[in-house]
Length: 151
Image (cartoon, rainbow, N blue to C red; front, side, top):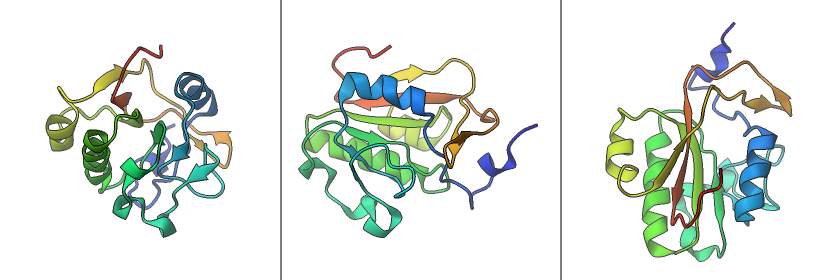
């Protein structure tokens, strides 16, 4: 049974699967989670809705940055912000996003601008630390300022 919350724009706070994050963090040693809540933050430093991460200058944060943005209607704004920030700094910015390669933000801000790792299968995003059903979409890891493979 599909988890209808993954289709709903009012429920976009699904957590990164912990094992996936740990694998990426072992490689990058992230210093900040750019889109989190106090309950699901993956890093000691993080931005919440109240911090309005889209208004912050991410390039002023030194070190690798993690971003599993809300998958609602503003997803393209998050990807654009990551791309623009990657031009201002040389630190990796790593995103976990749906592999919706037909969208304008993929064409404008990802293809030929970032390293892309398409994930095999469907992720089971977590909510309150528990895994949900498989996502109804494929996912990708998009890395700006990429240097070496993490897989």
